[in-house]
Length: 379
Image (tube, rainbow, N blue to C red; front, side):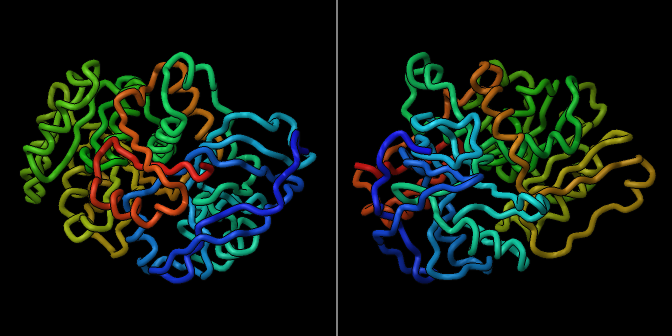
């Protein structure tokens, strides 16, 4: 179902090896049941794209890269009841198997870790979002309140995508059943995902958040950049990687020095070698019946205090990505004013698909907690 004639072809970025990019003209697909064809208005250039493409993650080539986008619905399959051509939408990159939702991929970025996930990425959903158009599952397409974003807030279209920062941590807090008044510890505060987790926890009613990091000056600078309404509810702790010392420091930073209810770990791969120390301290700072969430990337085994799990009735949750109820919930939080992206920075690189390689270099060089680079593919 489409309101206009769909062009026969469109341009897209294609990765022919782990290091070689080109632009290719490809046939434009016609959506069938469960599918939506999206005209892409802006797509993000992730700061870790080069690392992802050169990583040991499974990739088959040619790969049509992606990672989500903001766009307009061009056409939908006949079973789409709510989505209509012309709607402004956020398109999420987390694709789940419809008959096996435990199988998850990141569209155009992570093709999977087992044969069923690889089938999902290489047979079903091959069209990336670094493109003029893309074909995606209808459940990944979330209409946004265009009046809120464009007329009331006056934001550029690409700013809508910044809600993606909160998706992972929203799922994590659902696992841990975050309650109003909880105290939360997050590792690491100055990272893109850690910062988002802290801001989201506060928006969801956490009484206090302790942000962990490695450098006191960076933690202080990060805290001073928080929206004013959050500052009094946030403490920071610079880690020494001495577990007893760090445990005491974290507890001392919690209200009335009573410890934390949730420890949320988002350790990136580059910090994995020392993870046992800060995770041990985070677990040690938990109250009785505390909850632990692991959603980082630590490829090797770590040690942690078995005895404390038993003695303090602790619960551990782990998760990769999230289900498609999460984007709708996060968008509602932002559009209602309970969660803000006003202070998030977006940059648009001119030149369309031709500048993708330059954009990847710039995004890598300018890593910033609340920043993202974007390209508009349809000039």
